[in-house]
Length: 413
Image (cartoon, rainbow, N blue to C red):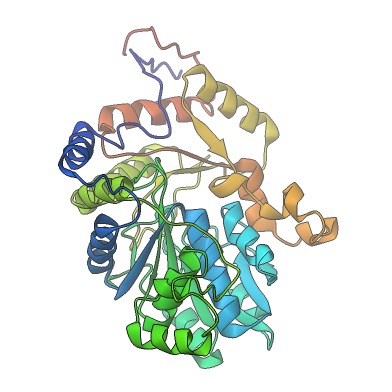
């Protein structure tokens, strides 16, 4: 008989303590020291961009107000550089990846996922590429690596751009090189629950100087003076003599700039990012080792991983087991998200109803399994092994042959 009982189990949120006292103290110190009260985009933003570029291993970074804004200007830059066409996108991702493609008049082409890493299926990507393909917009889901040597070689051969969404995978690697340093552009999010947080914020990264200059322009209303290239600015001013040199708008763009306070927070959090990532990965391995592999998927590809959250996937399609699982998670106040990244299969979301028919949805079996039977639970550096073990006990108890009801106030066995 399964008798394990849980003692003093506290609620388990998706994230906690991601902004600590040291972060707050650094911000207060900056506010007091900044006599000119310049809190809009300025020196600290540039400093954060420089330090982030060095950490990631790229030449250039552009700090914006969210990961979604990073997606938006990345797709606009792609359209300006490559023209209209198709972008291959994942079916499991955050809405802004696909929305940014649609908002810029590009056509999304969907592919299924690889269950081992929850990222886009390499085989499906290669099958989907044609003469209209402008880029592959690949999301590295929940800290897993979605790249392979074969995929990179194929994209190079076909002259197809790679755009990386690394919003959930800060520090993850492929071949000992950080994800986000492979594509023409890459996007990061610094939302509260991610590996580092600037409260709200994001970054676009590139090794291409012209792309970098374009991204800075697109970040700030499409203004030419944001280029940071005096020679090019002079040419533009000469080309438009009837316009004020400070107000030449090259593209119908956006204002997605961030601020000095967020940059100060990002600089301080960057100091402990590598250490925190190691702890997250240790937590993940312990979690996967202790959940029941007969009922939950445990054979994920962890090479290069920088875990964002615990992936919890039921092996079998069983709605009764799903209901039992969700009831137990709610009973112990373990916060969860069904569907993993972004609510599961994006093809089932209302915003795509005019782009996708029902017959099309049935073709994507792997992502549909995640949609109905996949979850993630919170993983963060302050999480202790003892609590992870208790979470695993709760998860495993759902499937015991003879189940003894667990109560948070009962004593340990």
